[in-house]
Image (cartoon, rainbow, N blue to C red; front, side, top):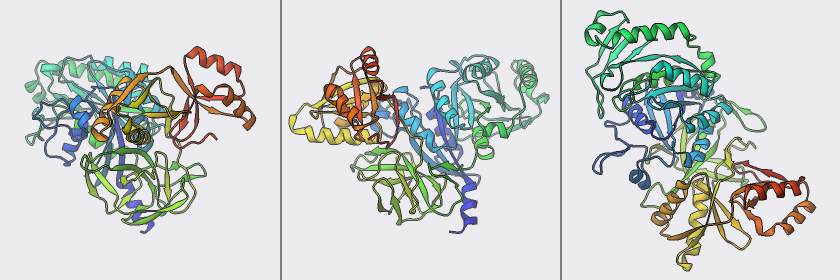
Length: 532
C-alpha cells in the first residue's frame, strides 16, 4: 500500500480509553458514545434487572453477575469519517493492572468524574499513569441528573488535586430534578434534548446565545445563576489551547449526564476534532512513525475464553505502523520465528468481525494458542521492542491447590493462562507450590470464579506467609548462588521465570535488603523483562 494511502487512513484514527473511579459512570458513557456513533441502536445499563440488557462492554458472565467491569474491552466504530477505537477499562482498583496496560496502547483518555463525589482515589492513580506518557485528557463530569456539588467547586478540586488546568467547554443548567441540559461555551448555544435513556432523541432544539429570551422562557429559575457562573468562570480560566491539551497540560471539561444522553455528543465531537491521531512510538532502538509502510505493533493484553463455547485466547494488538492484510507474515521477535496472522479480528466488545485491513492506532485481535505474551512485538523483520507495559509487585497473596488432586494439571494450566492474561500474578515455589499475587481481594474471587466456570477446576485458596514480593537482580553469578543458598525457602519464580524474593513482612524485606546491599530488590518490571 502506498505511503499516501497509509497516511490518509492514519489521520482518520482516534484511539482512546475511558478511565475513572468505580461507579463514576464510565461504562454508561461508553454505551452512549456507541449509541451516538451509530454502533448500537439501544444502550444497555450496567446495573440492569435480570431481563434487561447488559452493557455492550461488560460481556463476561462474572461482569453481568456483579455489575462491574473486570476486564478492558475494545470497541471500534465509524463516526464522521473517522475510525474510533474505544477502550473501556475496569474502574475497580483490584483490576488496575489491566487498565495500566491498556493506557500504553492509546493516544488519549476520557476521564469520567462523578459530580457528587469529585476526584476519587483511583482517578488520581490513573491520571498519574497518563501523566507518565503526557497523554491528552478530556474530562467528563457526569451524573448532573442527581444532586451534586457546585460545578465551580469541582473545577477547583480537579485543578488543585490533579494539578491539571481545566477549561470548561460546556456548562450545566441546573442539577438533579432541575437539570435541564448543557450550554456550549465554545459555540454559544444550547442543544436541547429530551431526556432519553435508551434511544437517541430526534426532537432536538437549538437555542443560540446565552442572552436569548427563549432560555428565560424555558428555564426561568435556573438561567440567572447559570449566566453568573459562566461569566465568573470565563473571567477566571484560560482559553482552550489545543497545543496545551496535546501536551497533557490542559483538559477541556464537559458536563452532562450519561444516562440522559446530555453532553455525550460534545465529548465525541471533541475526540474527533481535538484528540491526536496515532502518535510515534518508542521502540527502544528508534522511534516508529505511524506513517511508515512496514507493519509493526505490540500485544498489550491477552484475554482467555472470550467465547464461552470455545477455549480460545485472543491477543489484543496495537498497530503502530504500516497496514495489516489478512494472511500476512510477520516476525515474532521474542521467539525469533515467522508467524502468519490469518484472521485478525475487530471487536464490538465480545462480538467479533474479521478484519480486512488495519492501520496505526487500530486494535486488532489475534487468535493465540499460547505463543503470544503481553509485551510481544511483531514486525516485518526489524528488531524492535516497544516499551512501557508495567507489572507491579502484588500486595496480597494466596496459595492454591486443586480440591481434587487429579485436577492439579488443569489448575496449573488455568492459572498459567490467567497469569499470561494478566488477571493475576502466579509464582511457583521450589517444590512446585503455586502462589497467587494480586493487587486487591476481588481479583482472587474473580480468578476462583473463572477457574470454576472456564476451566472446571475447584481449588482451595489459603493464606500464605507472604506479605510482599520483589524481583531480584544480581551483580554476578557468585552473589546469586550465595543468596539462593541462604534464602532458598523464600524464593519463587514468576510466569516469565524471573526469581522473586517472597518476604514474610516489610520488616523481613528491610532486614534482607540490609544484609544484601549488592542485590537489587525491584518493585516493578516491564512485561517480558528477563532479569537473568
